[in-house]
Amino acid sequence: MNASDEIIEKGVVVIEGARIVAVGHDALMSDYEFEEMIDAHGGIIMPGFINGHGHVSMSIFRTLGEDIPNRLQRFLFPLEDRLICEEYVRKGAMLGIAEMILGGVTTFVDMYYFEDEVAKAAKEMGIRAIVGETIIDRIAPDAQLPYEGMIHAKRLIEKWRGDEWITPALAPHATYSNDEAHLKEICEISKELDVPVLMHVSEMTYEISKFREAYQMSPVQYLDHIGVLNDKLIAAHVVYADEADLELLAKHDVGVVHCVAANAKSGRPVSPVDEMLKHGVMTGIGTDGPMSGNTLDVIGLLDQVTKVQKINAQDNTVLTAREVVEMGTILGAKAIHMADQIGSLEVGKMADVIIIDTSRPHLQPIYDYYSALVYGAYPQDVVFSMIHGQIVMKDRKLLTGDLAQIIKAVQKISGKIKAEMVEM
Image (cartoon, rainbow, N blue to C red; front, side):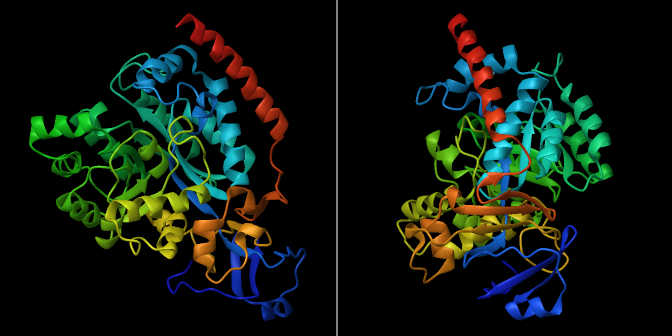
């Protein structure tokens, strides 16, 4: 997934410590003395996938209240207010991280409450993460006052800044749930401390109406107007965006994360991804939370991304398989402002490497690797995952956590959630 879209048959990746030191043909094996050789058995060796937006701890609410109107207001928000605590966030994160590792995700971006627990779970299970404490204009599970998340966010940054695995971030919930003063303050802190900003942008119809009525602007134009549209921002969703918005996003090097499954499931319009790419907007792929998109693997979203765009454009040439794989890897890395470290198998980059087993019937024969990945592969086809030079999954076995115990812990929580719902 380098700049020249190079595909190496009978390829070899040489890793020392946490980084890639050589990539080339199998002749490389005679140039190095190695402690361990991992045979891909003819599979696809590639960079790990990047999940650019999610709320991993919401895995504890997965499949709750599906296909009904106002499910967030009726179920999720009240349950979060009553139940969410450090323990539930951590155990939900462990479950979601296990799913991501098994599905070939090697980096994820997360925003939620008690986000320090997500960071600890990610570090323990050996996955790279950008974690942002939610800042919102109301009382929240970990905030007794509006905007108290600012205090927690600063503590999170102080604790994790400089960590090799974890990048702390500020996470104002959305354009409509933070006022101008706080958005400006968040922007200044992000510049001062050199940390990302995670935010839902141009996602909701009422969001669009609010900014049109109040400012005669789109949310993207409003962010630009108040001076907080910049290269620290990772904007999730961006469902509603016109030509002027796309030009602003590209001009300011804003990363955009497209959440196709969550958007489709919510019945929202199709995000203009093809136009984003044509405008040079760095656009990656995100699962959103497990209550919204349900699954947390990126490989399962690849064909959804391109097929939905093709349907919307009524043009089968829109958004090719190669472009979609880029969105899941190197372009996704650009969207989260980490392309100098991850997203491709290149010398000097972090050793975040996965292997796709191509011996399965649904992946044979292969004439085009990109098409095989996008239109044929499943998360279960990922048989090996290395993150930061550490093997975290091999032969479909999670090596950094007890999967049975993780599932058992969440099942116990689900029983308490069911009991709470009876009282609602």
